[in-house]
Image 1 (tube, rainbow, N blue to C red):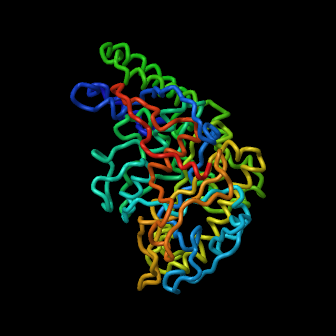
Image 2 (image 1 turned 180 degrees about the vertical axis):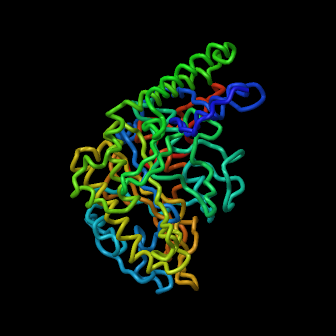
Image 3 (image 1 turned 45 degrees about the vertical axis):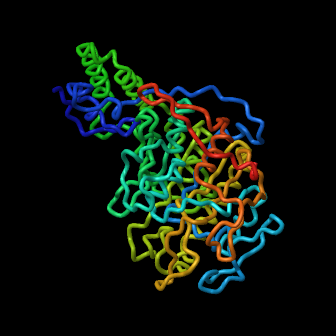
Length: 470
């Protein structure tokens, strides 16, 4: 077997060249090409739709509040409920008549004329990874309520980001990018549903692990390691050519052809000033950077705005934890099993309110909001009743999310919960419906198809478009 020894520079699909160049095993009972190498998606022709908002969203930004956004302190406050239900905070009016939100989001409250709220989202799953899988793919995890679930069959449906990667051709940069890290449970166990799954590695979104607040990036295929000179890059390109000439039978494989395409793309991005510029936050004014906020998530949201300006179709930003537990409770995340109200007041809500409002205003002022859909995402909500540790636990039976721009009707509120925000009373929405709505706004009916590595059609959604917010 021919093995290339290097330091494992990562290609644009997240696979190292060392992995990909173990050509003796490719397709010969060893390494599976279908799992390693890129193929190009074939999307069904877009059908016309009679529903409002069809095709309005040129791009999507997923504002991911991983860990569970609390419905009581955000979009569905219950000020008349008992103290153990309503929590410590009150509700404030918004720019939308009759709509009140939690008092810790005053900046967002001024922008609700641009925002639609879903108050009765339901997964019926109380585990991060399995409920998250349903939110990311629109498919219920098998089995449900399974914490620390790992990727793999039968739970390997493609994520929203992967489907968009399949539907939209790359324009220089990949059409789907995830920042600034993957979603994981304790022990760095990744959730299922974050990649293309059975649809094939061809459609995996780019995962870019980065610290834009520190101007540190690990952008696959776009930078050279210190010991990798242009001469060595050219030598490796020559070596790839020799390998492909020797392995005549393998070069007839679509997977190898696709690898050649994507390896060349990675090389071309090394010298692409335009691609590098999209990640250069130093081109933003200090005022703009301060407007978003100083943290890793906040600066990733600013980066997301730059990426949609560079024709990236979908950018998903995942909330990141704080390594130093002594600084914030609950690792600085939204999984607030203890000191819930304290965490919201001291860290979570001020950060979220500042960054979300800055993103909406920035897009609007640049004339991008009408063509950019922003989705405030979470895997579930929190229990109606505060627990003995002054926290709220997992709750997938009713929670709230919000959308803005890209064909959404600002000021719309859909769904009603009971007096404790515990269960839907009217207008329940399932994750498959949310994804169907996103695809609709991007110009793809739910019956649109992508193709897996074996050229088998995969329908992108079986949900119902939420017409009430269009």
